[in-house]
Length: 350
Image (cartoon, rainbow, N blue to C red):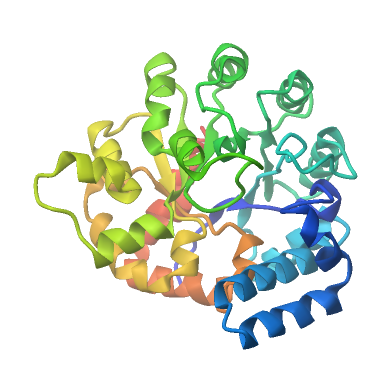
């Protein structure tokens, strides 16, 4: 294979200590603490025909297995085995302290500090991002510390926890800091994932909608923004299975995959990017569609490779297998674009 320096733009190494005790629900606490109980519940639910609930318990088990590693370095070692030597990883922490599940065992500062130490020991292979919940002044101050003092390479936000991407603390404090330092931001953009407790699906979707980023683009045109997950698998499924009526602009706006494609084309060469994390790894049969989308240069030039490890523990197929299948499907030139060239541009290295 041709020499290539892959950058995986979307992985996680946060541990169980960074997840609130009662996430995702207080009733799940015994399942997290007693793995054998969780497996028994999963089997019982499947036997009772409750496949969706059984799958949710299975996800919790896998999440717990990796999160229980105890150290971010151990989780990083698990993902590094799936990629060629020299692969770089953009590591995205999580601040779940304000989502309604109580406080995690370790505060965000401790998570950032451990990640900073991991990056310092990685010979440049770990590219740490800060994270923030802008509703908390302490979280905003900690994100600033991670960027200004620890030298983190960008910012991760998760609007689905309950805040808009144009929150005043982001617009007035953190985005200007990123622009000043030439750093990017990555935002969760899928109907799945973590939703703030008590938040309606409708409200969570409104906060996460790709077009919720338009005020940010208008106010900070120099800020490099990545929409994670390329809209998510629900919208890819709808696009593929149900289709869209030709010329129906509103239908394209409602479908997040179509909406992101339209935004990338409308802002060609501009500040907006999208990564393929989790979505393409959970549904490898999307790969031919991605190949066709990437034949459009406006889309290809702003698409980033990312996997969303260790959320991909929910998928039976290994990251190595899916990544190689992706490389074979796209061809060497296109894979190099999304896995090497584009990440370097998004990170401000080119």
